[in-house]
Amino acid sequence: MTWNASCKDFDSSKDVHMSKRATSMCPTLVLSSVKKLYVWTLLTSVVLFVSALGYNNVRSQSTDRLAAPRDSSRVFVSDNPNTVPETPNNDQYTLQLQKEVEDLKHRIEQLELEKNTYPEVTFRSYKDRKRILVTGGAGFVGSHLVDKLMLQGHEVTVVDNFFTGRKRNIEHWLGHENFELLNHDVVNPLFIEVDQIYHLASPASPPHYMYNPIKTIKTNTVGTINMLGLAKRVRARLLMASTSEVYGDPEIHPQTEEYWGHVNPIGPRACYDEGKRVAETMCYAYRKQDGLEVRVARIFNTFGPRMHMADGRVVSNFILQALQNEPITIYGKGEQTRSFQYVSDLVDGLEALMNSNYSEPVNIGNPEEYTILDFARVIRQLVGGESEIVHKPAMQDDPQRRKPDITRAKKYINWTPKVPMMVGINKTIEYFSHELQRKKHSERNIWHPDFELQSNTDTSLDLGSNIFNQKSADVEDNLES
Ligand code: NAD
Ligand code: UDP
Ligand code: UDP
Image 1: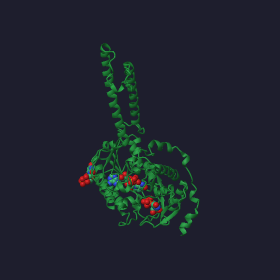
Image 2: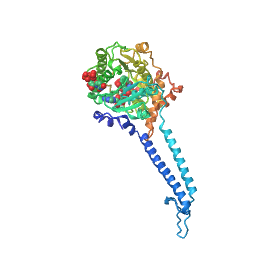
Image 3: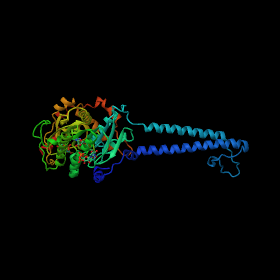
Image 4: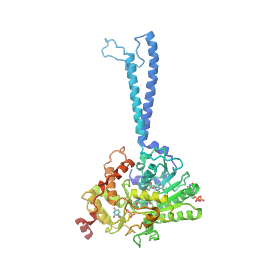
């Protein structure tokens, strides 16, 4: 399903569908259930038949030793009409049936094993286990956060309207006893019982949030007030996923949390920027008025596996273009800068902030800053393709420099990013290249938590730290033209 197709009707999802329904839609589980039902039915029939046969054998031995078995399909029939049909040996027949029963039992055991393929989660007692809501949990960042919380042994409820999120991102948890999935739009009220709320529901990439600006505003305003109302009712702590976009096109560099920002309130990015700014305002109003525990994470550009293929963000665009030998598109001269963090660092930061005692806004980002032009060259080199770098018109109100000051994060939540950008980019290239090769629906998402754990121990991906010093001729040519 393409993004455009999925977003046409996103505003219509008014009902809450419980996870069991979602679970029943998971093809693997449906198939497994149908197979299991089929095998059980067959097994029951065979067992009944064997019992009936045993009873008939006892009778037939005393009355008619040559009587044929009841199942005529198993009687030998010769093509030659003159041949006298052979009477099958009942003992042999019973043995054959017993063997079939054993085979079926073995098959059921295998199906039981197949069912329990969830990643192993930590056991927590009732006292230590939290009930955690992740809105936007089927999206890119949300799904990685869900993995972490599930592996820690918490009970996780995902609320998502699948505007940009996908079941594929969380398919490995469907049916797990600690996991719930609600197909729900946060613009509508939600009444559930939880201890913590990570409020991530919002489109995040510029093409996605500009696609339906009014919906973006509703999601960030009405949606946030609903989640704050829920948090107030159940006395839960709420972490709101804010953004570096609250600083707009910043006049100070790097950006500290004290900076109030420079946002065009009527520009094309305003639906998102102002939506997030008012969402922050509402968090602190609920804190002041109702004593709500709030946490505000100002997230800087994040990338990694499970980013949407049609996301339109610079990381996914450049990697996909390079992998397909298409031109790499730079908006404007490419002198604008961004600081990119790998998704696992962000997830660690969100969790650290949620469980800290600090309630002022905190920047979560990697301060390594690159120009977009340099970034294009890195991607091309790592992918190894022959894409040319081309320039397109600059985006309106595109922030020119962006880099987080993370002094607060270090001091109050003891967090710093750990994953070097090159390592993260290689993992992301691997993910996208697999997605591009995908031919069948049944091919599962490779970014399974078990796979991630293995790849985190693989240090061979740490490549190319001096790529930034290499100038490539065609980049220079493009800039001159
Ligand atoms: P994403 O688009 O992959 O995920 C957003 C999720 O929210 C999707 O699953 C989407 O279906 C869901 N959603 C959108 N509107 C909804 C609604 N009305 N009701 C219920 N669900 C809804 O984006 P992401 O990159 O994972 O971003 C997650 C959060 O982090 C967002 O709030 C975003 O603003 C914030 N953020 C992300 C970045 C980044 O670089 N990824 C940077 C700054 C802030
Ligand atoms: N709300 C919700 N779930 C709850 C509690 C409240 O979705 O468990 C919504 C509620 O519908 C309202 C919003 O949150 O629109 C704000 O709730 P609050 O109690 O702060 O305000 P009020 O209901 O008094 O307007
Ligand atoms: N960008 C680009 N080419 C693309 C996509 C983005 O040059 O194909 C630029 C964009 O103009 C911006 C930067 O890359 O300056 C980051 O864009 P992105 O959409 O990833 O996130 P933003 O930080 O703007 O929200």
